[in-house]
Length: 154
Image (cartoon, rainbow, N blue to C red; front, side, top):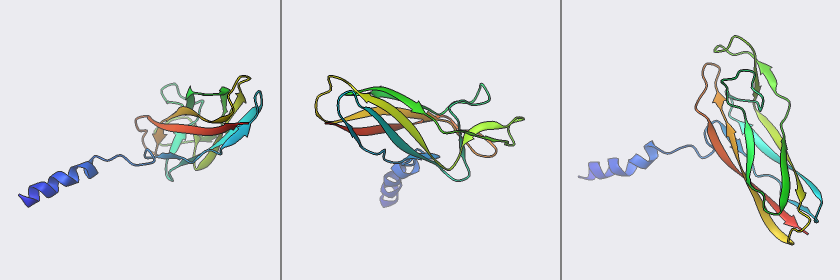
């Protein structure tokens, strides 16, 4: 009976997902502050696990899933346009043509405007970063990482 109990207790570890969603992790974005109508920019640090890449926001092949940050709630902020870094063009075994990818560490930059009627105080904008990671030989199912940007309206 103790063996069966030990096996049962180990099951959650067998099916656990990596904390950083596997191939990509997002660092904590800088906290920003501004007055009503002020323009704000936030750097969102992203790291791709060594030996992998993610498709850029504009993949070269139609079947590849782009890196895309969408905002689900802006709070007292408006806009939320995202500037993506310049992508590298790299050749891999599974593709006849070079692909538009991101590797290593890079920043996404989100631009906001504080709403004219925003209440003073703290808040948070939330979003989802969707990506498809690949190794030199294969691509994996897309994943999504939650993003939170904290702000202070002065």
